[in-house]
Amino acid sequence: MTDSPIRKAQPGFRWERVDLARYKQEGSAPFRDITRQVLFHEHDLPCEWRYFEIAPGGYSTLERHRHAHAVMILRGRGRCLVGDQVHAVSAHDLVRVPPLAWHQFRADADSPLGFLCLVDKDRDRPQLPDPQELAALRRTPQVGAFIRTGDESRG
Ligand code: MN
Picture 1 (cartoon, helix red, strand yellow):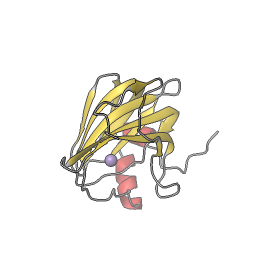
Picture 2 (cartoon, helix red, strand yellow):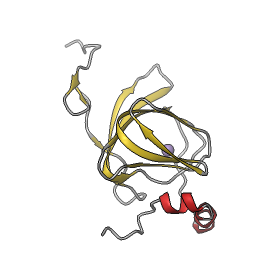
Picture 3 (cartoon, rainbow, N blue to C red):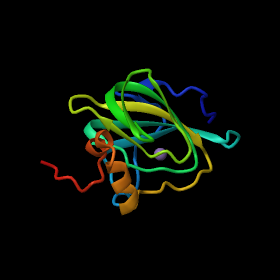
């Protein structure tokens, strides 16, 4: 059977023949309420295109790595930390995450946050902040109030 070049869009930001996957291995790093779909992972392309969706109140892992991210928000509203600044983002905004910039995405409490993320196919593993790096991040009050590391109570 020939694989169609078209994967039709499905309701709810799904695509034909694209699996809904875990964001990461459970317990490998702090995150909450986020799914991953790999839209393109091709033999002859050095990059990969993923769609992540964070449910209301959820967040991606606070991390950094040598590879960059190019992000387009597709759905909803939220905020993101890039480096030492927190930005409000919504549909069709573009976010560039430079190499080694700390970053974290959070959906607003009343909205999902869905985004495309373009990334190198071969890439270094994300680093999590050690206690000193976390303390340094928290020295910026806006950043300290924003970041989630999984230690927060879920109340
Ligand atoms: Mn990342």
